Length: 169
Ligand code: NI
Image (cartoon, rainbow, N blue to C red; front, side, top):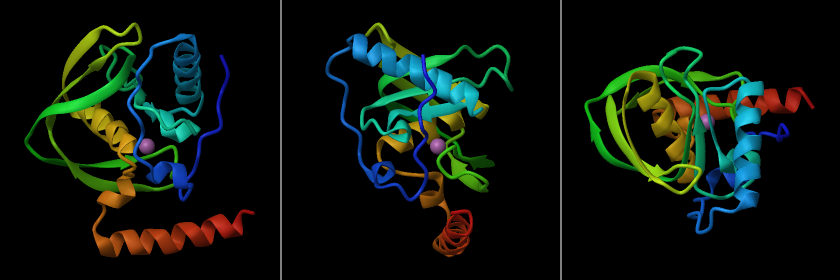
């Protein structure tokens, strides 16, 4: 297993819609293991394949550091099939280091996908897990949490973030 480089905003791969996985092979298993190690070492509670430069529909989520009973999840081709309620909470992203913002998302979701062996999986989630799943599935659509900020907040963020990026070269 290896820790992969996490792509940072404004890397163009983060804006691309990821392609569905068509074959679950050894190469994909290596990617999944590397994504898990990269997420844990960051540390983060979720990671999507485009964040490590692979434009495929794979996510890993592990909220057990904050909600002990939740197992590590690997989801291939995940889809939100039901979303209910609205809740605003603070979130950040490993691809946008140093920034957090309050983002409104569905309170509860049902997500369908495949596990790493290709077996169908359905997850009902609320709380942090629901938020993490929605955030990671957004990555597969090329959407970052900053895209969900109001236009004024986003413009303010963009200016500050890009100025800071320049400053740390
Ligand atoms: Ni993220």
